[in-house]
Image (cartoon, rainbow, N blue to C red; front, side, top):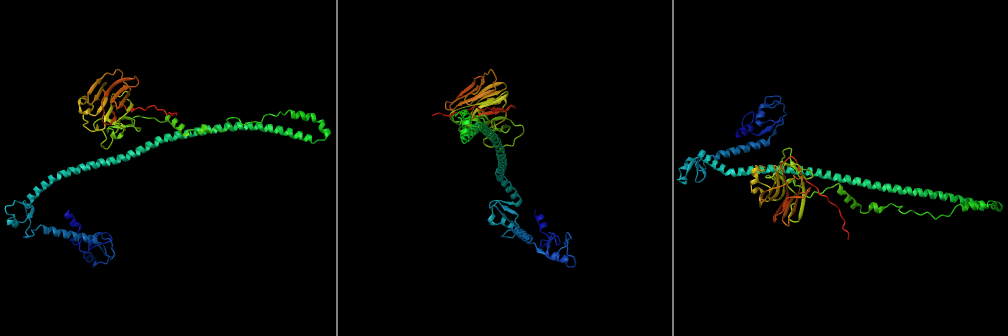
Amino acid sequence: MASQLEDDLSCPVCLDFFKDPVILSCCHSFCRVCVEKSWKEKEDKECPLCKRRQSNNLRPNFALKNLCETFLQERDQRGSEDLCSLHHEKLKLFCLDHQELVCLVCSISKNHAQHTIRPINEAAEEHKKSLEETLQPLKKKLKALKDVKVKFDLTEAHIQAQARHTERQIKEQLKKLHQFLAEEEEARLRALREEEEQKRQRMKEQMEALRVQIADLSQTVRATEDQLMDQDVSFLRNYKTAVERVQQRPLLEDPQLPSGALIDQAKHLGNLGFNIWTKMKDVVSYTPVILDPNTAYPDLIVSDDLTSLGPAEDVQQLPDNPERFDYYYAVLGSEGFNSGTHSWDIQVGDSPRWLLGVSEESLRKGDTSGLWAEESMRKEDMWSGLWAVWFICGKYIAFSPQHSREALSVENQPERIRVSLDWDRGELSFSDPDTNTLLHSFTHTFTERVFPFVDTLANIPLKILPKNFSVTVERN
């Protein structure tokens, strides 16, 4: 390294360290004296290296000058440090007692009598080894920090991907609601326009009949008034006809506006928002348990609506966050329960392997080796904090921290499993809602918050089913 730096700080002409260096327009640097000497007997001024023509202006290279001066000062200082400050002898030995460099004269002086003296190379080797041992924990710590940084970088990238994905899902779901509202608006405006057209048409028909009646009576009145202006002889000659004409026009009751002639605003505007909201239940759904993708085992994938769980087709680069399972091929519900009654249905269909129940929040990390192997069913610590029913190899098995395992007798394979939890009473049951058949129930005094637990390795996804709901109005 020093040799390379010395070459970089040497003039290409004199091959010595730069003295008063100048830089040419071609960016090559030389000592000022070397350039002037090279140009002394030449008419064309050119670079001694690349031969490009130059102007007479030689610009000082202050940066290179400062670098050369610093390097020379440090080199002189290093040279002086290699000599003993007392005897000006070269430092070749090392005193282990005083932990300092000494020369040969120092080693036989009374200051170092009875001290352990070693050649510099031996002492340096021993101290390097000792320092290397001392450095090992720091190197391990540095490696651990770098590993953590990789996880943090992955987590940051995952956060960005999650935000963009969630943003798209929000827009897609709200787009459906916007479409529903737009269609509802169009339907209600269409109904208003139809009512307006019908009632206006009815008014036009009545107004036309009224116009005809007015015109007929107006003609009779004008004709009769004209006769009243005739001479007596003429008037009396036509009197009988005039009377008959007037009597043929009976005086009917004045026409009235029909009932319901106006727009029924109450029908169109009354509780408009509420009515639309209640109708909206046909286009939205309610799922009692929402899966938390941040807890899902890396080989599993949660659907966009956070209600289904299945194996991922491709390898996923997911952060190893504290909430994520690395023991069970599972995911937790996003909401835990520490009171009340709760129930949810899971569509298992023809899935050959599933594990359903509730677990304490601490059930996340552990040894994943052999999880789905038969011998793993005997691990007692595997079921700590988990109450579940396991279907595997055609068997139904109940697991709990208290009873470990219990084989269940199930006649017909259910397509849906209903999990019902009464936290306050300490009751947890599993049933087939299609046949109203109880599969198993646990009794336990829960002391911690528990979360819905869904575990699968099969290619058939498991799905939390939506519940029917209704909107009711409380009458006072």
